[in-house]
Amino acid sequence: MHEDVKISTHKWGETVVKAFHKSKSLGIIGVAGGIYKAISPSGWHSVSETTERSHIIQQFKFSDQEDLHLNINPCQEEVALVACVDGVWFCTLKEIVKAHPFDDKLFKGFHGYDIDFSLQVGQKYNVTVRYDILITHFSEGNFNLTWVEEILKLHQKWNKVLPISKVSLDKKAQLLIEKRTFKRFIDEAIENGINKRKLYKILWDRNGIRRIDMFLFLQLNRYLLKK
Image (cartoon, rainbow, N blue to C red; front, top):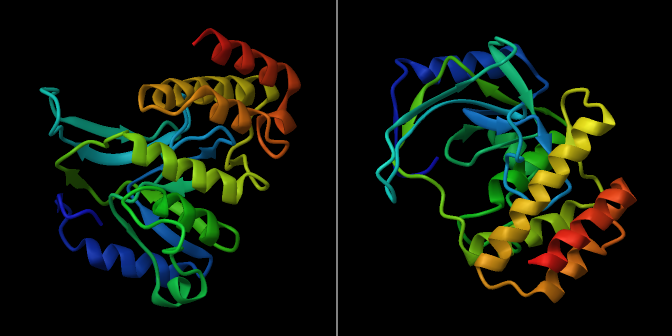
């Protein structure tokens, strides 16, 4: 967990222990995650109103925004199956970490490790978000150059198996998510000083967006050209 959190739920540890005892297929318990991990470079959530699952109180350190209680549970589930979790807080088992260790050679900072670990564990176990544990996070994310570079390393490692979806999406819905997500990444990358040549290289990767849909690939090339 991050150091700037407060756990509000009484006896939350008992909830965690019971969950792992109940299900041998359970790999990770988190409080925020995404049911769809895009092939477009991104964090744990995509640019979509439908793919986030969370139960967390988010405070803001770098802006005057009021606290948000993000209780996103459109299917009214006790537990949501997700593709990856936010590293703000999650639990797993010691034997799972031993079998699927954190990649501390590739990810040395504060970004990417949570998604990478989720994707590793998710190859064999279920990754979940629970709605009966509530925490408060005292600061929002900081999307800087370091974040962009770490996300690029993450996608270079996992592009061959992405995208991963834990729900059934039709082609139109999937392509809309990918389009919005890649556009936001282009905006954030350019804002943080990544040159267009590097972004074109990412777009042209045969294991990337070209594999998903050629028309979307051309649309994103046009969008990047106009930036």
